[in-house]
Length: 363
Image 1 (tube, one colour):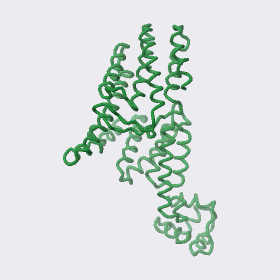
Image 2 (tube, helix red, strand yellow):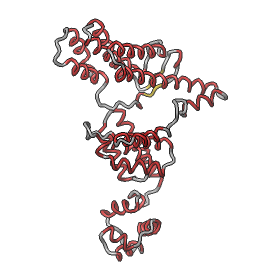
Image 3 (spheres, helix red, strand yellow):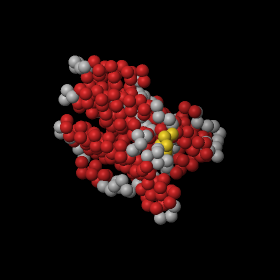
Image 4 (tube, helix red, strand yellow):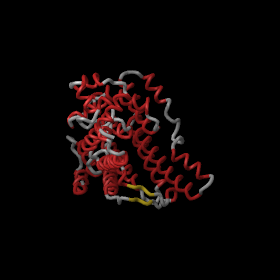
């Protein structure tokens, strides 16, 4: 199909006259007629505007076959995930933005694009990306909710638009969106597979129950840690909450092979070190700082695949190449930087700086 035939088809589908299209483009209607009769063709510089008018990608106008389009999108999704895993936020943002310009009607790309607008790395202080891009986010989220049938993508749009409603003081509307999400963690595909295979395939059931135990542990650790950070009122309560996280992790990973949760062990121990330092309990503070940085180093040096050996998750595998870091710093560097900021201006026993210096080579 020629480009002229494609333009004619898209124009008619959208009930646009040749005169209207010419006016949009700032050309004569005769030029449009010449295109549609295949006597001439639009200049390459006119393709982006045509694509925007018809709400298609330039590929549609050039009729690049759908297989090539799928290959391009699959490569984008893989690269996008890789950049996220490495913490290359700016490259991730630019990649999603470029792809959205090429494929504005593919909801898989739109989903990544709205996340990038919401967490725009160019705006790391208020009003953040969600404020800067509010109007476009509203438009794109509503488009997804109106036209997209893929529930995972719809959930992304619902999550973002509910946050926008909260920012605008529309608490009731945000609540209406929240009501549309599943009621509990049991309403997930992994939980449903566990129930399915419980009835018909023991090996697959065992695989899923171990996977779900790991996911549930991760979920609980995040919740309890956040309780300690944001809800607990006293240092003692914060310490108690953080230690409960460690007890939970030790229960699931009883042989000390924590895999990804080495990150949690490291981070929580560094948080405990700060609390004990504030209380002038330096023996505890030093012990937790040492343990925290030790496990941060363990996390940074994990192999690509971690196979667990603890009873409840035995033989469950974690692909560490798919872990999103959100920062290009490794865990040791992040924890040392955070602890250094915390102790700035304080007079401390030299043992603290000795521990920091010990792990600096691993930043």
